[in-house]
Length: 252
Length: 252
Image (cartoon, rainbow over all chains, first blue to last red; front, side, top):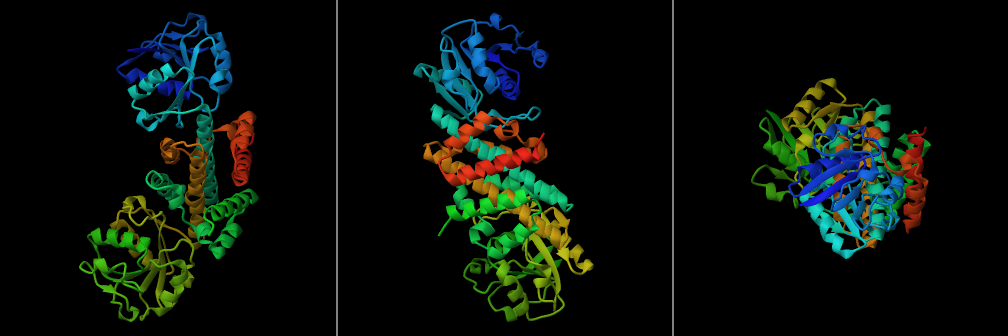
């Protein structure tokens, strides 16, 4: 049995709480947040706490707090030499106060407040300054059925950057498509199966091989017509830049 | 029973062939292509033909040929006053020779050669110059379990443009993420669940509401570090432009 104290009350913390709570070999013995407002509903299932000086002794402390709060929270911990991990994709592991053993437990996924997620779909990237703690972090991930990857700080920060492309930027392209269709009174639902299939396709073949479309075919008349159809200059700029980039990538 | 002649042997034609073949109330009585090389394997199931002067009489002729070949193929049809539809997202319905009744049967999806697709995930956008033919086209779509939408030429061309954003451009962002991770010896598989979840999320909430990330949060230190991490100028340019566009869209 691994004992765990969870710190933070955001999306990541809440999803982790539910996953760990459902696992057999992990016991969440306490859930801390500076305000218990959002977590007091779980009072019957675990010890809730808003006083950081009253943290219980546990095998692992998971700091699922915002990037800005990681260093400060780790400074405030009233003990030494225990295993502390943060859950951020970008914060350096050395930002954790060195009085404790330090590591990272980074779930690479987008979490929404009211959408349940299966942790088998949440890869966990683990990192630890002391090698012997890697095994514990891997075990934590395995207990919630997550695929687990041991990575370096540089690799984690690269993944965080890549995630901006596949999630934030991709989502913004979907937003632009929504805007374009809305402007012509077209039901955005028509595009939803294509959005899903685009993501499904690269689960099996590389995005390089999956590329199609007028930019790849160098179909000048379609490219010209599309640019003419776009009403916003910012959309034209994005169309032009991504078209150029596709053609450079697949240049013959 | 609706009788059908299919023209073309590309991905769209082949997927349509399989779907119509499995439907109860549609009979594909002939499959034409200028070369029977790719379709001769279906010789036992339907009449195969490479001589356009020998097309049989049918209720509907589906021209699932490349955009460039649509006008020419429709000119070559050796009959008049029958219902002809093309399957393109961008070609004008008037490019079909006016000696026949004209329409469009546009499946808005990405088709891969060896990947089976359920037609319930393929919205069909239909258009017809004569109103009375819309019902037939809708029936065709319903017979293969596709959601069907009656749209105008302008709306179809707008959808085609929007599809470039949600499919071609999105896929290229995934390619860039693949490149970034490969360069640091990171397994691209780690990103695949996030790619899928990004697409799933907008099935239920709008892309506007689904937006997250450092651009939205105006997290300057992360934006700066990401730009520094990117090695290629073209990737920096895309990062900068999409970040700006997200901030304009969600400007406060």
